[in-house]
Length: 640
Image 1 (cartoon, rainbow, N blue to C red):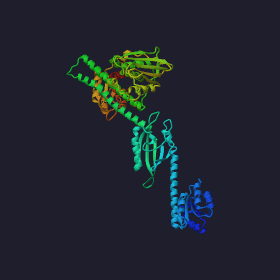
Image 2: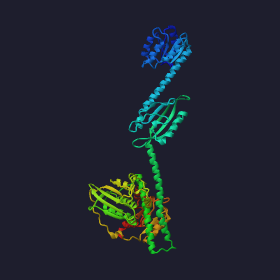
Image 3: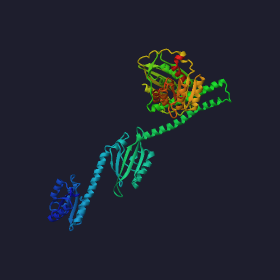
Image 4: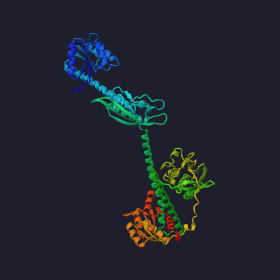
């Protein structure tokens, strides 16, 4: 069986044949591999040639004194690591022990030596050497690993506070442009390069580690002459070699600036979210107040005059439109963040899109008595895009200009062809944009803190929507401002269409506004109030109306009533609107009826499901009554 010491080579040096034989016999029986030398000269030759792990060296030799042999072994770089256990007879002067140890011997024994003592001494020396080698190999592997990692590894002696190792990453991490400062962990830590506000808690953690061995993890900023501070994280801990004794203190430092930046962004996003929710609640309550007042004015006990009735109706109409725009913008934001917004590709007359945007924002412009001047190209300009979305972009920009301008302010919009692009500029002379806000003006939920804007309201989503819609249609948008109270300018660039649009067939204006009435209408909605309000409108317009609040009731009514038009909510209890529409298409009484979805679900996949279920139209609540009339005209055009 192989001994644990069989790979250990020992050189036994003694000029006394009997003593040399005895020691070789003892060591061989203990499992060591032993070679011999009888003189100092031969001993030196064998040390160089065979590199023994340990030399058992007698002091008295015939040619070279054993003390000199030890000195020569330790002086040579090739053999300096060889263990030397010196021996001498008891009669030799006691100063030989001192001289031997001072000459480099690792230990000293007096002969005659007991076999057990010799073996124990040799094993103890070898175990220490094995431990040192293992530590050295471990540290070497550590250095090789640390030399190739971006984090800084360091190690020091806790007794002297002397740095034993700092990885090369230190130079890269702590170089502020003029070279890295000398690394010197201590109470000041990293040569005082730490931000003053962070120094004390780092120094305290370091002192606790030195005093009590308590590991720490701290974060601190390192000052930089250029580019601002960088955030660092450091973990440090004791490395024991035997229980109760710390032979090393090790630490790891890494740059966490990106993580900190992400944390700050998350905090900022969270702050903006809170502000947005507060503003959303404010914006939703604002139109509800005049609607509530208008309802109270319609109380029978107040008997409003015909003039007041018209005013009340206009108030409710404006506020409902405002609420609808808020909801539409919120849904657009949701679609954009989920990557679900879809655009139609059609040839758009830019002037017509701008006219539509002006019409949308006209009430706001009139309310603040703004002067709007337009300077459009003399020749028609056409682009490929979504006509509704293009108009929405310019409506958002005009609304923004109105919001940020004082009363009786001036707003301009102009178009110009430049190469294969068209440039559209919306300019105002309002409160302008502060320099620190300009880079973030298209960020979602960003709003300035001006009292003017707060009084005007807004959710901070108009400009982000405008930018996204422009970019989705192959364009770009830019913002300019000379600063506060210097006005603002938004420039939109869009690619021009390569070919003009085909001439559209003339529209019969009389047919478009022909009255529609007299048809049988089945109205299906689980909201009693919504169903009642819509049925009153339909009846006032001359339709014959029946109402149901769930799918089974609707099917029972349709078999006897045979409706020509079905206004159908999607979110019904039990049987949803899609299933109900499919069932109606399969029944003779409603197979050819005009099916109109009137629902709060308005995303692209909702519209596709409506089409697959057999609906003719998909209208999103709140629906203007004119939209329903237009859908009916389209179905029954020949009768009008």
